[in-house]
Image 1 (cartoon, rainbow, N blue to C red):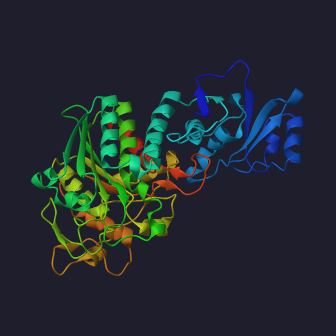
Image 2: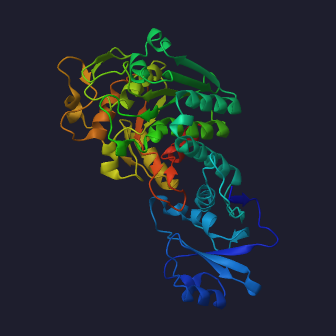
Image 3: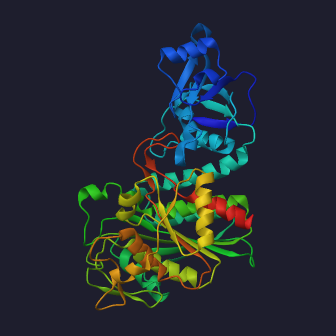
Length: 457
């Protein structure tokens, strides 16, 4: 790790002055440091770091630009410190409005994906801010890093078998149990759509089921889309659209990161994770446009497009989760390009009929600087995915409201759970940002973790 939080300020430690744009004079830094900032054109631009020189070519401190009024991810701008400070011991010399997020930003910004080679980075140690809990920061950061690592790993090392191995590793860490239904056993156990989507691939499709927590506690289930790679099937994607398809298991990666947070917190919940893990590949065994698949719930689905496979595997998994009548089901998936067109890569939409849950998620997204935006389950679009030969089609024909149509499709498979929410995440940061480099990203799970902690602590 290029940056670490230390429990207290080191005996010899350099100060970090957090300043807002135009308020440099109020930072508490020396006149010499202020003159250095002026000479370098530093005025407190959010996310910018300026080391302050000391005697004999050493370091005397650093400025960090912060915008205390910023929304969304701005509260995590401290992440730039991980990449902008010289090696050594540091501490915050100015009060912080949201010390937990400041500390979390520092750790998240220090992430590096090192599976295929370690990059040399300076050893930066920053004292944990007052009123921040270093243990809580570590718990959340570990979940985020797990999700990032899984997404960043290419499919040759993160196929369905490797996704199963990742679940088993996490289960061992937290003394959870795992069962797996694989290959043709999916047909015998009535998961026909998971089987159909994954049967063309070299690695067998599977449904991974992890359980943790005491019997008798409220039941909560996470469902994550685990498409290890999506060619689009016979409705094949163009090459440019396949470049990031290793991230199509981002829903699975995110629910595993969230699962770590929940289990590490020891929440009082009977907890379950379901991951349908497949590769949507092409062979003589591929499912076809025009095929009609019978789902676990008994709903028949006409295939209008084989590239809308995520909702098929989720439907079987959601129906299975729903049979236990849990208090809460949450599913996460890199499901539609329409969600990105509507809200971009940084703001994942979520869908739910539960007004109380929606309010909790919205509040948590703000408090945890983990942006989310609610989109409607607009009933008027229910007929958009009608079929003339089956109960429903897996796509709508006019191309409008794709994210809503996908959410409405999934809702048909949840009828017994007390509450359900669907998250259509991107799972990727297309540019370097203060709290994360370009690559796989956890989205929404810190906000969901806050909701679950408030409910089940």
